[in-house]
Image 1 (cartoon, rainbow, N blue to C red):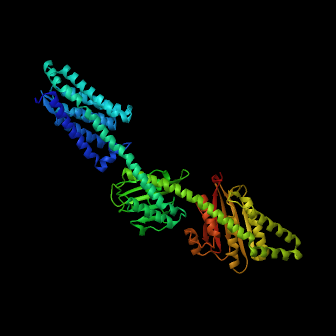
Image 2 (image 1 turned 90 degrees about the vertical axis):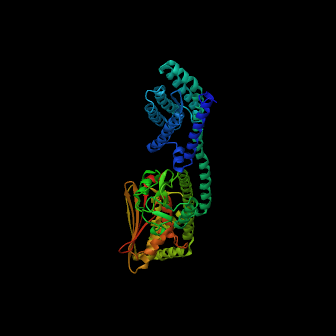
Image 3 (image 1 turned 30 degrees about the vertical axis):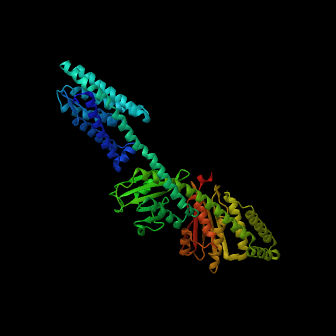
Length: 557
């Protein structure tokens, strides 16, 4: 068949277009390039990458062109249009301009040099406009049509600018149909790349299944969120996603850490990395894919995702790798899904634990109000006062009835602080009647402290100060109950001059390892922590123990 026959030219063009399609297919199998093609928003470096790729395709298309009567029949417009359609005007325009100038420079004075320069630039502009204005699903069709029109423009310019006219007409008669029909390759290239983008949906489905598998496996450990259960959760995530280390933090401390370097971190270790602090401050995901500046030089890739409850950042999920470029698109989506699941499960667990703590508190209250020992001591104190001081006996009866009525009406709702303090005063008066001058109680209550607090928060602390503080020492002792208005918060302090708490007890309370039969301080600590995010502040003083907690006024809604 004649080499200049339109059918021969078309087959040769289709062969070169197929080679272009094959090269692009191979590129989409390279993970780092594939990740760029799968993005919905592109960084400047991503746009530079795809511009270089399609620019080289356009230039190679020119070099692979078929010489027909002094013209080069090629697939340059296919590459330009594809780049602009897929990645926007900047890629299209730059690719068209560079490849058009290149085409002009290698054939200055040629019959088709100027027409090819003009249509290359036009193709870049038009493809960018289609990207901006045409729905994604229809770009392949509009791309083919626009490519054909660009080649029609090329033929018109050749006829207009060729000298002699007969030469231009001869060239157009041979190459017009093949070059116009070859623009079908634009649609194939666009659909190929879009199929790579559509793989995100399949990836998302697989990652969703993996996230649900992890959620199902970790679910039992959310029934009681403590250092042991959180460590097991980290271990499961680490194994399932192939990470080198996984950690969970609150806003200040590491709650659990599993994997490489585990021996360096203790539970309660303060967060040191600026990346984690910034993630918690901003609520944004932090990704480092080749981190040379991290304080631990063994970490090369990391992703830190904030954990949120009711829109407030309460901690972070951290995933580490020893090698660079491990944070792929699919892993990012999986990590985000995991963080959402963990946040939800922790919030549900927190609600359940609040309910459990309220139930424990109610049980404790019932035990107190029906305790024969307590009632015997209270009634004995009243009986002792009847003959010697009837008025005092009458007051003690009122105190006891008020104390018992409070406990009988107890529920898990927040109550006015003054009502709680009245119950404390009733309890204290009964105890003072029993121990006489050995027990002194001082009150420092600021005005305008009208906040609501959980029931049975202050009384157990006062009881602990008396029983385990004052009565453990010989002689007199003082319990101080202070409620201070400090702007946005109301601060509570119960201090005693007794024996002083053991550091081991403080540590057991903080770690949640107090024996189940000693739920006084531990119960109050856990309830406050679950409701307000922070538990009791407990410290041994030079003489006795000081226990504090704070309630934000904004938490009253």
